[in-house]
Image (cartoon, rainbow, N blue to C red; front, side):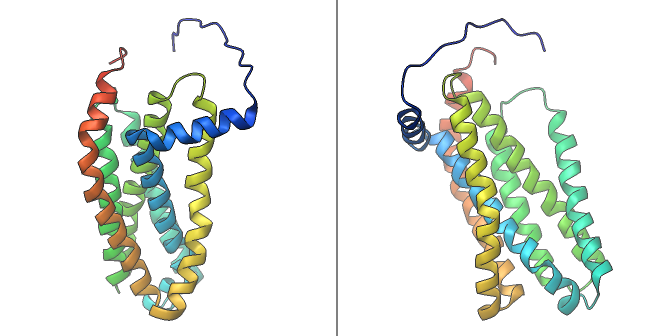
Length: 219
């Protein structure tokens, strides 16, 4: 990467004041707010699958530890494929569509996984779900890195990481509570439905993303 050198800006503001200002700015700027909420959503629902995967392996697919290992491997292959796919993109234009598509793809795939009683279909659905999951995550991080200023990039990025990674254990907790009451299958279907609805709502923000991307001289 060939970048022009920039002079470091030394801030005199207090760290807590900077953190508060960055938080207010992030949730007041529609594209960043949409990315933060969307990433939290998919990580939250992904926590459903991680927590309830062993139940599907044993009770739904009538397998054992090896079956659960295959399920985890399938989702891992999907995330790997999604990362390779995104690495081939040479522009950020259209990332808002990738965000929405990845969220919807993950939701639909997890719904198929929840309803499947055949191992090969469950594995295939998890490959696709992992693909959609990583598309949303990587695209979201790219958008955050692009649209924030140099002065608050570190704080906004750390906020994104806390929200997205913190949503996974919360999803584990919710999955356990829901799974005990409505069953593992219905819990995953519920989470998948939220992803699909979220992707539809996200498409309404396309114009805001397009304007933000177009304002960058690097494009």
